[in-house]
Length: 341
Image (tube, rainbow, N blue to C red; front, side, top):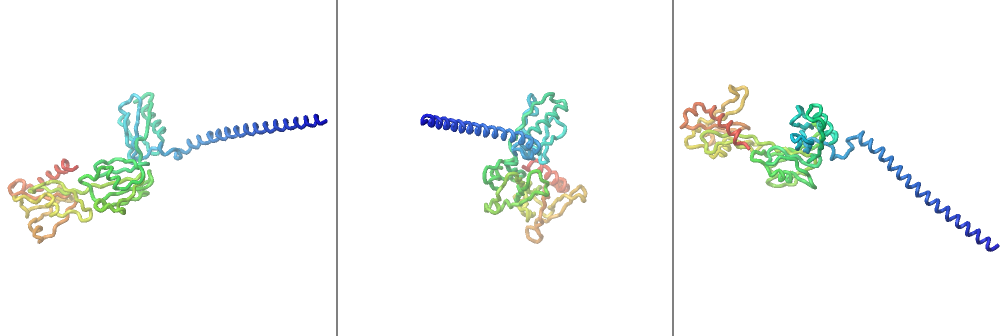
């Protein structure tokens, strides 16, 4: 009886261990089956969602205005190069008659659209195209206007206006004294953007933290060119001189000083300002000046406007004196074409 009792106990223990082992195995199998099904469901739902909502794709694959694209078309060297997307969001390709829309498209969509255009125009029968984004405003700041190297510069960490001007190798000689920073979401209309104006003269002199504003991806910095005043005739250094002071402008005596004064043969009391005026004969009007009286402070020192021509006649050139306005206009036109950076 004792032997039979112990045998039953051992048999019951074996059954219990076997049941526990089977339960553990079934649980592990159930868990692994649930994970596989879950991942399968995630894959089946994520892909259509991405396709239905292109805006939710990785931002690196969306083309934006001012992006630089690297386009490679197999066996077509004329098209395989870099292109910049225009501010309006299009790309001009040399063999296509009209610009191709690009902004807001994924790289694959743009590649397909380009391939279709090339095929429909009979330029490439079986186009194979690879498009990549070389630089993007989404991670960059664009600087244009009167700087030595206008480009799109990538942003790494905290960046200020002075940093961007330094990357652009500084201002050009004809730069004005203000910079305009356009800020807003890419693709918005101009009314949706904010424009901040910075006094560059004050910034460069003081490096004030108030004027040295922080830049953000997508910002555009524009440095307008200063207005030019031309001084020609009997002066020691004729040329075009930028009006640096946006508020006060440039006076006649300041322009004369830029031209290193009049020559000894100058007819100072017969000088004139030649100013564009559509209502005047020939599109220009003449404003007589007496430099002697202005130098003696007996007459006011007139303020010059952008593109004004200060003409100082020469007593030794009688023919040029009689046709002073024509000679001044020709000289100023030459300076505008060849002397301006």
